[in-house]
Length: 103
Image (cartoon, rainbow, N blue to C red; front, side, top):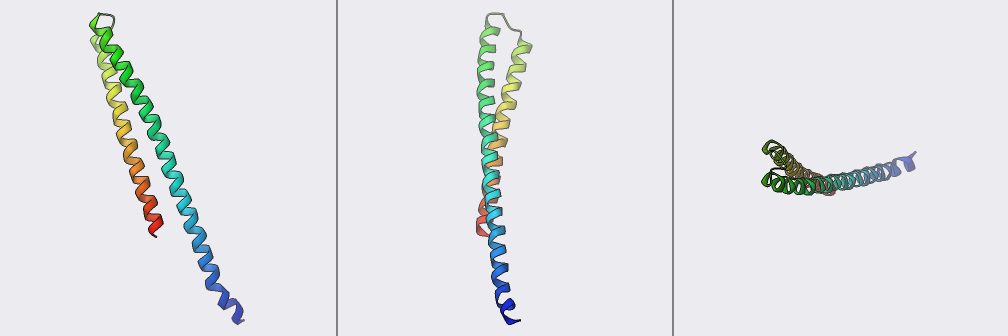
């Protein structure tokens, strides 16, 4: 049947377009997820900065040990590293989305 052969490329193109749209939507969702992770990391870093600032004040008046201040300093460093990692993940997700858009 010649009609089926004529329609076959159309169905392949339609399926390819549907796959591309699904990939694009998945890439957009990946970016949104990584942006949410970044927002969370930024909030945690803000809290860690505030905790460290309080720790510095309390060490100054003797209410907190230097060891506890060091723990707050380490927590702040970890939170800032999490922000950097989350930013990198947003960049990676964005690059992957651009790759989907090009393909």
